[in-house]
Image 1 (cartoon, one colour):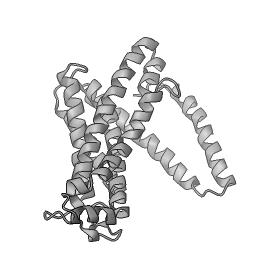
Image 2: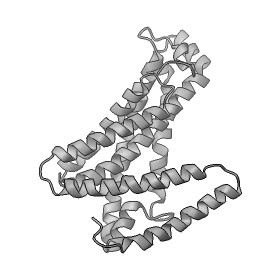
Image 3: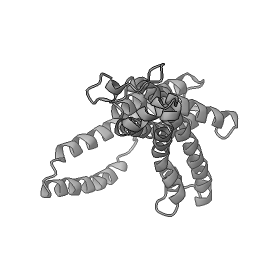
Length: 262
């Protein structure tokens, strides 16, 4: 993968910034110097490893390796989002299903519509962007919905007592949760190209592509991510709210406790 050591001085140069960040942490007694060192070391090892792995996978034919890598991505993302929503019953299952739905629908549509060919070189990087954003939206939606249900318990129970179904009683909270999950990508889409040049576009430009070619790809990427977070956020919202109600449309107060089993 690295036939020469031309990349080494650049990495060392970038490490200077890490050293400055560690210095700031020590100066302000933030106490995160060790975390920074661990993060930098893990990033280096993980990226080198994935570089070799992708080099191997890209040389293979057939869908097996692409699906395997995407499956691993979804599993890790589901576990991570589930950890963020740890006070939601069955959080890891809900998160994994939500990320899977968002990834499958988005990636499937892109392939069916021939936006990208079904080849590892295209499928895996695109899936990585989709899964990452779906994970974030899922975790945010789950957390917001659970917190709102807990804070507005009295309001919800009043609505249920007046004859509302669980869906009607939790409708406002579900809407806010979905909004929370989608807001980061919507805000990013609004300001793309004005505040920052996104990763896909920057990578293409650094690789020598023309700015107009990079822009075309970035437009596709931003649009697909909006769809992905919508699918995942909606799935997470509907699956999460059901964990706090009984079939008799009663709010399970015990499930809203921070000590509730996951």
